Image 1 (cartoon, rainbow, N blue to C red):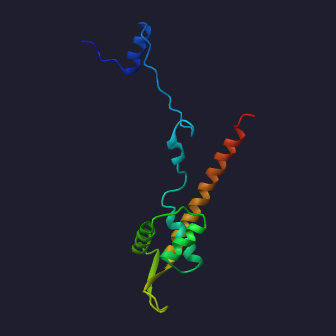
Image 2 (cartoon, helix red, strand yellow):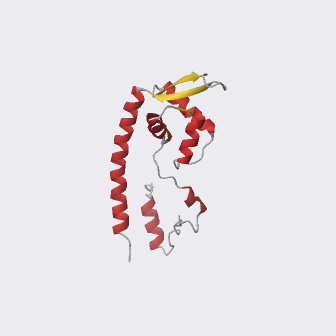
Length: 149
């Protein structure tokens, strides 16, 4: 009985027998050859939550007003449902609170504000982002130093 060959042994045997190993395909991920290149997202996940907390820390806000401010601040346009689902989840987690406001004569609106738990969560995010920034700085240092003239 012959022991089964490991893959590397089988490849070596074929090469020695005059049969070249199958060519490995190398995929070019540059923008010119791969349209998915433009879809690379290099930001932390759940980035919306700390952005909401920072904006609410500056001023209490309504969902729609917050959506407009986030867009004007350079945050990508988003479906309002995404913002409201995130706010609802943040309220369930105790990071924000909301109250119905009916005093301005129009329809009732929810006004959101940051809780103490939300402040602590934001502090943790800020510390994590500070550490991530150090990693990014090191990456860009290597990237710019490694460029060929």
